[in-house]
Figure 1 (tube, rainbow, N blue to C red):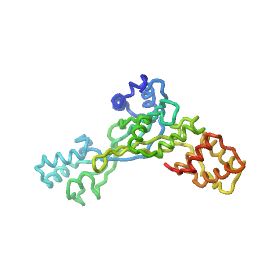
Figure 2: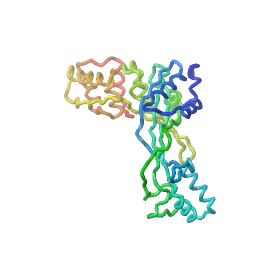
Figure 3: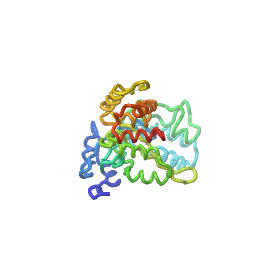
Figure 4: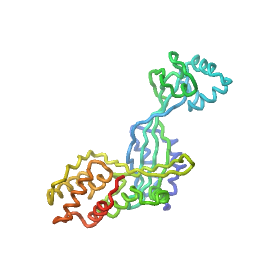
Length: 319
């Protein structure tokens, strides 16, 4: 990794998140990330869908009892002599309240080179804590600890916020290095690796890959302790693109104009091919129609793009 990126460690990003209070937007965080990224451009590529998870415990006045509901329930059960009824009585008598964390994951991209895989993906969670429910539902008393932690019939209450939103550093992935690791775990050519290679050798490669697509890595431990590594191509184009019409039966300049129009709307050459491989907006039948057309009397695809399409026809794949 080059010298200007040394400051961009997970520890530095984590510390930055701890001391950065979210505002109306995430511009301030973006500027701070840019400041520690040297000359490498940083941008907020995508904001994920809202999610929520179990929070902590507060009393009826909103005073903090614990940041971790699960840990609190298990520990307090032991402190109650493992008497489940004593735990219920304590939580009910004190009208304890369970909170939940609501958040979205922010995906920041840092460009490090000219190839499709030359970027770093930062995942940072933006969360807020809200009151969720009474810990004990009087009408449906819990039967076990799990029923206190995540009840099927919760006693819902009016929700209010605790403090301000917060940033939490999740992970940093150098996509170029990750793809090298992915190849080691998948001896056959991985579809995502081929997608990137096709991008690099086509005219789409003149466009910044991570402006429209990102690679989302997956790593976890399998049932037998083995490391499972995989990846997904995610489209982050914010502009709504139309479905590419059925090209079967179209030829020559008519077909070429349809492709050109889609590429112009997407913002780069040969875009229709990559949306087709992703299975988004463009049917594989259109790739076959274009191939039949250029195999006849028409030659409107640039040589690099034609080579990619011919390879796809010979060995189709999708991501």
